[in-house]
Length: 280
Ligand SMILES: Cc1cc2nc3c(=O)[nH]c(=O)nc-3n(C[C@H](O)[C@H](O)[C@H](O)COP(=O)(O)OP(=O)(O)OC[C@H]3O[C@@H](n4cnc5c(N)ncnc54)[C@H](O)[C@@H]3O)c2cc1C
Image (cartoon, rainbow, N blue to C red; front, side):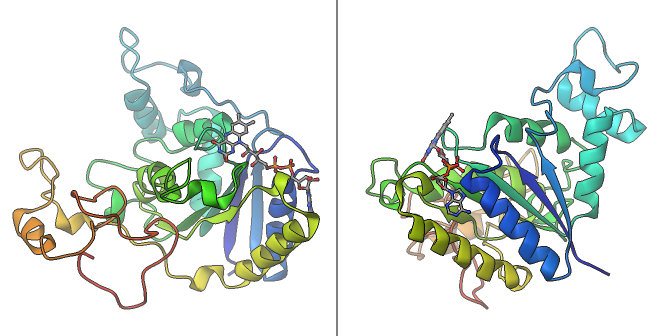
């Protein structure tokens, strides 16, 4: 059976660099036998705001509207709005999702944030006992592919914007890994507006090369759920014996779980070497 990829794409302009990156992915992946679906969010005029209109019919509690509870119940009852249901169908069919976007305010453009807010509903994308490495999408892969205005050096730990690993943490850990996805290393196109044409052409070539072997890449490493006391009583915090073991380690576990130690270098940019185990 053909592998299936969903490209969730957020750019307004068909001759933008983002469009060229998306088109290259479509072409290369189709050439490689993938079934490719693109959700072109601006072209679809995708609704970004999470509102009451996302639920068809009656609410469970119309006195006090709670978006999360109502959409989880509507997912169960199959009464989510048609646009959300359609995107959820595409997610279910995909083995891999590529999010293609220009970096806006250290994050995704609002239309893509709206896609996360509305498509990844409770029940469909997560539940209390299904998150992180026990997450619902643990058999799927996902990755960020994005352009920046900034040059790479501005996003180094001593650069004016601060460490890009910190910027990536909320999206890669808080959205993708939270829902269980195996997160592939991000593809970053640094400052296409401000670099010469040959550099842009070379960036596209290297993207095309990477696409050929995407599914055999080792995903990024995140802290395993097994390291935490997964109970309200335990506060979902690291287990004491893990904390003890970490005392001898040179780095924190991940960008977010730094436990007062230096961050593991480029934890959100590159996968650890094959066969590395343990907490560090
Ligand atoms: C609201 C907002 C917030 C932002 N926040 C941030 C931020 O937090 N951090 C940050 O770093 N940046 C930020 N930016 C900048 C933004 O990320 C960049 O402007 C964007 O990533 C550039 O990508 P693009 O596709 O729009 O480039 P374009 O301007 O579309 O393209 C760049 C160049 O590539 C050329 N090109 C197109 N196709 C090809 C091709 N096939 N081959 C070769 N060249 C080609 C184009 O002609 C153009 O010259 C922000 C911008 C906005 C509007």
